[in-house]
Length: 435
Image (tube, helix red, strand yellow):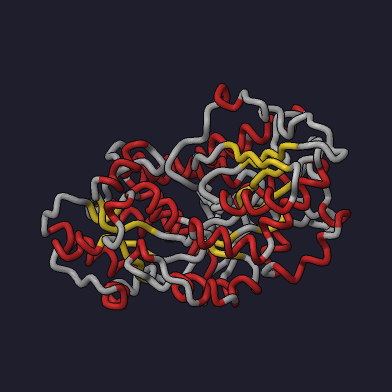
């Protein structure tokens, strides 16, 4: 999914460490694997949409019970906890989700994970977009850490009722025409702001920044914070500075609601209709529905994103070697990442499949989302998925991203000027990379 990271995620923070002290707190339980009942623990962040898939799997695998742990969206909490579990050799689930921005970091220690190539995964390569498959491989191509879940094709979700209140078009095709570029997006936002609807035009500057930087990097150098040699290039990559400057224009125009992404205030703002637009990778649709609730059904819709496409989010499922039920965990990971599993997750929460077979399936291509005014989500997200341009993410991507977005936040809150914020972003990113 994605993240954050992040695919980040979902509305609630990851369950605190004390809450994780449960029967599955040390990863897979100690039940015997010789025909007796076992419990498989799946660690995720965000809303992967696996609940019905778990029940289906349990129905055809007698004696297997699946417990999902940590359905929050805070990747900054999830990742350190997973890292601690891996280093300690205990605590991780039998299957763990790894967000794309953290994959390089985990591939540095592949021996923490079962090599899925040793368990027949090689024959599944054609079930994934090539770049998605390669993301899960070590550089020498000999160790497959994870099987791909989703990709994060971009759009813009918006509140039709707030657009109508501001005297703006509400039909998705007309709305898409309003903002072919981010500069036009700002102009529309200024029109919206002038109508004093009681809502801001967008939720948070950090979400817009992350969208723009991934979009700009994808259509340009193919990397953002790190180059493909793992050199930190925050201050020298034009894609990052361009995204910063564009975001600062949006902030200077007073269009943001200044909600901290994934915070309680952010979640409440959905329910209270306090903002009109939000950068919307496919997985975000599930987050919006979960946060805004049933009362907002039909009030949301989906338009194209300003600029040129983009890709935000996407994850993999891996099996830590510490799992006491590796064989069963591998089979579960294969099932969840199969075309069928990815279609099921899409139907449940909206994460866009990374499987070409799933992307071609009528269940995806012809799908509409009733919550979003019957928006043709299959056409909106799936059509461009096969041509998505992935962005390379280096070894400390998550830590660096956090510092850059923290700097965006200080400017958004009026604590720093754009140039002061930029200096903080560069300096703090360097410190994070050196830790």
